[in-house]
Image (cartoon, rainbow, N blue to C red):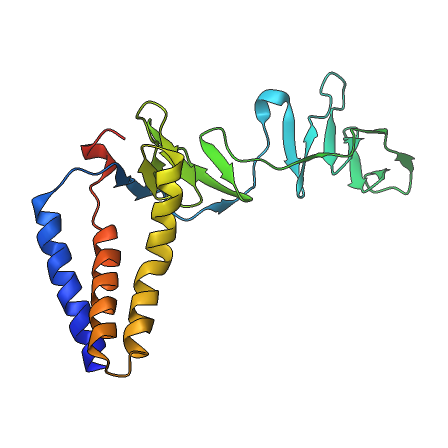
Length: 216
């Protein structure tokens, strides 16, 4: 275990030195920032004449009659006449047993809830829109790769797709494999040396500039 710790200390120190040199690279880390915790979808598009009722959106009920109508789910019910008490589907004359059935009509099966106009839906949650030049994935806004014909590799931008694929493979597997090789070396000096070189190359693979400094 001491051998592995020494390996990791060595590669981190060398990586820091290389990072300070700032050598240009055809691959870079994307700039990013958080946009907060997503909020549940809970709005209706008023510009389309929709209003929330329960967990769905419905067209507004008509208001060109007297009494006007109000909505409960998929049904629009007419308000009771003055002097009558609302009893659900009936209107009862105040202090009397005289009743009449409310007029009603259907307004459709309803539409799913949406995000507010100033929000973006992502994976059933609502987030603020990202600033210009960025795109959102869940709670994070990532800068777009802007170089001519760039390749998007998730958290990285590359000058071409082949380079992106290779870089992702190297970042994902290089260091764990190097540490495993050191652990399984059995104290063999040659194998430890090979593991050190592999770990060093893997660590150096993470040393990349931000895309904002390269224009990728």
